[in-house]
Amino acid sequence: MSVITPFPGPRDRTAVTAFDRIELQRILDLYGRMVAAGHWRDYAMSFERDVASFSAFRRATERPEVRIEKRPQLRLKQGAYALVSEQGAVLRRGHELAGVLAPLERRLMRVVSA
Image (tube, rainbow, N blue to C red):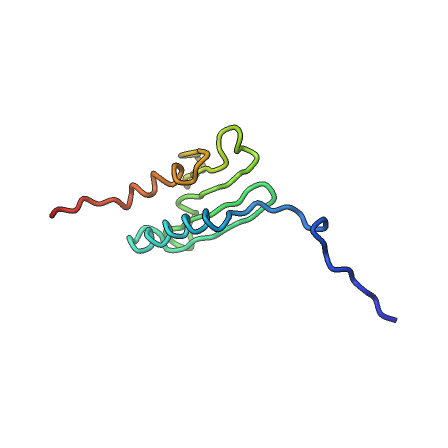
């Protein structure tokens, strides 16, 4: 006879932390501007049970220059978002993604003379 395999329901899946559409759009917009400026060349995303991570690389063979992490467990304490350096030090932490990305956005500012 035949064996019927049940379709996995929502209770069967493990919860995974991820960036929502607006957060990912903001991160990828910054990534595109950093690529255009020549700072970054590659990226990687990781979605695990307790953390979502976006890593940006200068070259594909190196460690990531920066990591943008989202940890929902810390949203009531230090803030869900963190900017982590290549060495693993937390450069910025906050409740708003825009504030955490501010140091990277400052790297793109240039003085324009009229």
